[in-house]
Length: 426
Image (tube, rainbow, N blue to C red; front, top):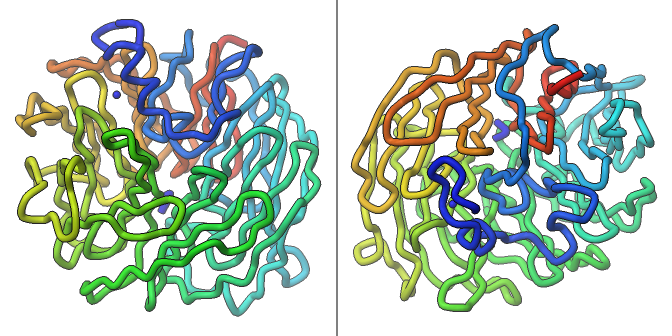
């Protein structure tokens, strides 16, 4: 479970995209090119400002390089200044070694590899077949790389591969392994620890790795476990951390972890999707067993806001796993079964539903007015953003893929079960 611009082709103004950025200072685009520094990019919402992103590719066509990756992992790569960073879990001699890899984006060669943790074999037994021990995506900020392995530990490295700190004291019993990625806000690294019991949201001091706060979920849901990735938003000039979990989604005060508001969604559990924020609305899926998409108004929300701050809901074609995407006035989402939907973001009115084919875990992104979907068989489906469905391409790399791809200028990086592909113009 990997587990809204210059007006190009109907995209919202550039100011909208920039206002949605939730990354820390130092993670944005640099003079050397666009960066992609956390799960779903600098905005955390799948919005790419890259140019000349490939539309057509295949297992042997428009492949710049294809590098075999050691071990197993479904973390997405992150990118800055020509370097790619990702995590993996390698089994050697009966041990599980959790590693961080740095690759040269130009040729795919390994620049460095650092072992961060040795996992206790007893702590890695319960894992879903669609998960890995290295599913959370790293975060780049300034001269540091933050990597997260859920209950197995969290660490900070410099960009040369040296470990600065490790935090392995947050022990909890996961269900199906780890999945949610962390987010940086105001010098804190925030993530969810939603295990089988006593779920909570946690913040570490990004400089030292020390625990700054832990906020219990206090959820009434029977199944406590989830895999959500938080999103940082601004509401009336006030920063909130939005963290979905089993039974509800809530907004938290970054400095203290105090819960500001919550919207309940019944017994929804195993929540995987990352929230999206646009047009003053948060888009959140309740995930299993019957996903419902909630469009929530966080402005003015306080306490239990379920009855007062839900703008609209949808229950058809809603994803359990892939996150939503807002482009201009439309929200796009793809169900795990492969049915994609385009709807009015403000009202939920559906413009189109189309079956793309295959199963889906990766989250879609937009680049140059095109929506990119990646299915689990390794087929990248490209459609034109808009109220009318227009298929542009089906691109098969021929290897299983659950990780969300990384778009960049003149390139697209796709992680599969065994490889990292760079596609573009060789």
